[in-house]
Image: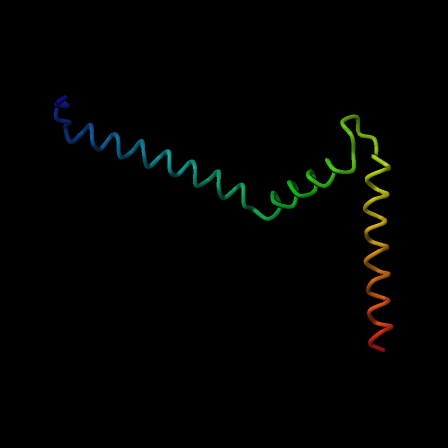
Length: 85
């Protein structure tokens, strides 16, 4: 069994202060991460990653797929309204 030496009050206070500082820093990082503008920026970057290649060029096949999906949704909605109407 290993017996650790007793810590002084100053050592304990120092550890508590260090822990408090680490937590405050992490909280600041988290608040920055969830800031609405940063969330939007990450979403835009993610969307660009789908439609833009590593050289900054547009990926026409992916744009075509997305456009086709939008057209299909519009057509389905129009058919749905026509059946109800």
